[in-house]
Length: 330
Image 1 (cartoon, rainbow, N blue to C red):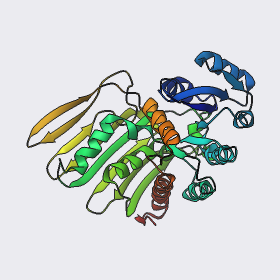
Image 2: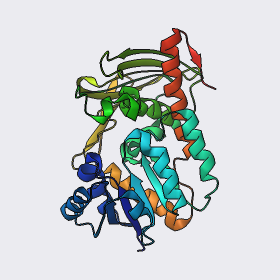
Image 3: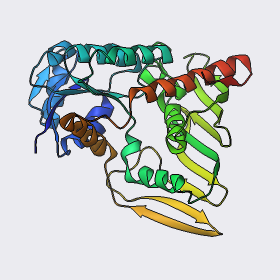
Image 4: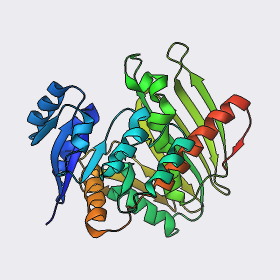
C-alpha cells in the first residue's frame, strides 16, 4: 500500500504523546520528519519517536520535497499563517482545531485554498471519525429517538497556569477556543445543520483575560443545544441527545481512550441499553482517512467551510455576552 509521507510542524505535547504515535500506526501513513524552532527539541523528538528527519525550523521541513503532507499542532494564532505557508510549499495540511482566531481569518484561509485545488486541508476534529460518533449520528438520522429537541454538552478541565498557551489571550487561548469548540462542533455534526442564533454568557479571568467559564444556548430551530465549558473546573465531559422517543448519552465524547472499549447508552420505552465499541484510536482513523483522500483524489470528509461556521458560532457567543442579547448567525 502506498503511504503518505508526513511532516510534523512543532514538538507540541499533544503531538508527541497522542497524535504522532497514533499516526505512525496508520496503514497509509509514514511520519518522515518533525520540526521545531529549537533544533535540540526536534532531534530529541525524532529520536523518541523513531522519526527519520529532524529540522531546526518549520521552513526547512516545508522545503523538503520528500514530504507530502503536514500536521500542524501549533498554538492557535499560528494555524492560518503556517497552513498558508504549507500550501505554498505544495503540502497537504491537517491542522489542529480551532482552525483560526476568527471567522474572518478562517474565511481568508478558505479563500486562499481555492488557489490550490489539488491540495487537501482539514481541521482536526478527530472525534468525528470514531465509530461511536458515527453510530450515534446514524441513530439520530434514522429517527431512532424520534425528533431531536434538545442537546446538553459539558467539557471542562482545571488549568490556572498563566504560562500555558491555553491561558494566553494573544495566542487564542480560553475555554471556548480550546474545548467549547468541541461542544459546538458536536451539536452541528449530529444535527447536520447550523444554529440560527445563540445566547451566551461568559466569565473572564481578571488577570489572564481569557474566558475560563462559558455557557451558551444554540438555537437550531426545533432543537436547542445547551453547553458549558470551563478551563477552571474539575475535569469532566458529557454529551446527551434528547428526542421525542428516546435519549442517547455518550460516556466520553472527546478524549476517547484508544485502548479501552467506549460506550453509549440508548434509552427508549423506559429501557436503557448499553452499547459497547471496540477500542479505536481516533487520531489513527483521522490520519488514515485524510491520507486516503489524498491517495484517492477525493474530498476530505470535513471541508473548511465547517471550520468557518464553527468560528462564527464562537464569535456570536462572545458578542451575545457583550450585548446581553441573542445574536443571529449570519
